[in-house]
Length: 272
Image 1 (cartoon, rainbow, N blue to C red):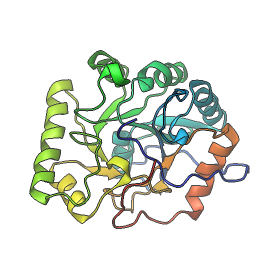
Image 2 (tube, rainbow, N blue to C red):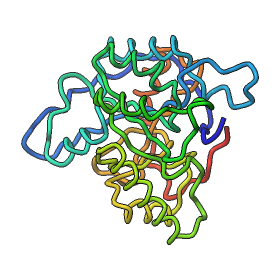
Image 3 (cartoon, rainbow, N blue to C red):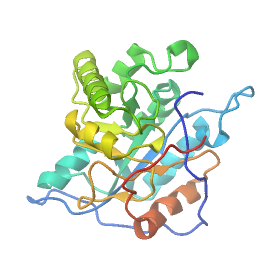
């Protein structure tokens, strides 16, 4: 499986997740932090696959996790909505907002994750490489991508491909990321405001290139909650790995709010 990776895999002990007050329109900049989840493949791992099994979250498992989030008072929002809340206090609705992102452009995001979120009245964020997997290899088709956008999903990107970017030529990085954003904006008529570092790998040159390419921020795969006072180009995300029970996911989210530090200044690719 190309372009997917995961950080060290741990499951926190079950505990009662903490609750929080819903960020709502206040007329001033919002101050609450928001958790961001990241999924890779929402499907059962094929028997012949040699990829890290943690990257596969079966559809039934994903559905149970989403139902648990809803029961615990969470509801899905997009990164653009979070940015509007942080900038001017735009309402994130009632309940506890959470961002649910999907990396690498797998068709399972449309086939398996989309119906679950749609049933809850929720939307997701698709981080799409411009030249990702073809549909014949399990990648999203153009029709599926347009279907997600029509349903209100936010489209963001990982660049031209899902290959790691650290150590690349700065000028080439800027050109490639600018091209990736402009290509998706033109093709789908959406802003493409956010960047997701492929394999969680970035360094100062990559961050600078993302800024220059016009993105408003970027997400890592370092654990924690996204905070308005943090670096918008190093926002943390919580990886959801295969075998995570609903209770473990709720604990993973609540624990990360109080125990995680800010993402590092640079990060190499994770293994998977």
